[in-house]
Image 1 (cartoon, rainbow, N blue to C red):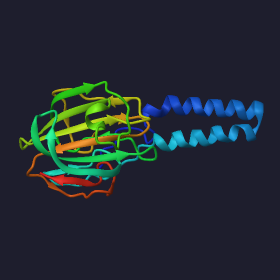
Image 2: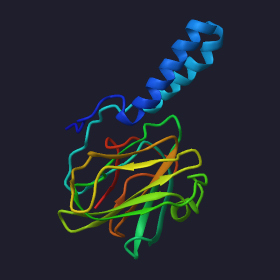
Image 3: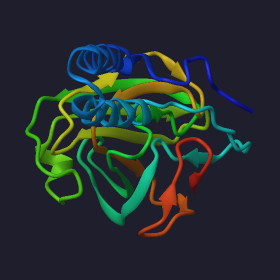
Image 4: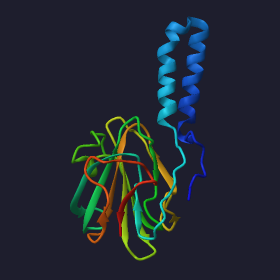
Length: 213
């Protein structure tokens, strides 16, 4: 099954891409290709950064899907700072070459949304989970399980976009947000969840299974 009701180039990037193309064309016309070449390289970088390809969504009622593209940098038992419970946390770090669209890991209803302005330290650092700008969703699955999914800004990232609110329903693989220019997503799961990824794994949003509840 696919969940792809959006353009292959994310709308979040259209203004950046349009500006980059316009500037590159103007410099090409008035200054020549030699001066414009670095600008066209930047334009191509912006194009690849905002790509948002469709993904196949694995089927299985209790599956927790990866909410972001990137590399698994943490798999550990921690205290969920939002629901104040012992939980298993899986963190996925996105570099500037990954797709930055964020997708729901489970089917469920959003019980609460937390937003914290925070700072902008390197998203791969330990303190980023509680120090950086972040947006957290508490999702209650149909079976009554609690999943916390947290968008975290990074050193370069300066804007977290979230398009859902409390009481909204999400389906696995549904696009719900975007983080511009490098970031991280933390997922807090019940202690009974069976983690399906390991430290260092490269994962893709929606198509890779993070855990099984």
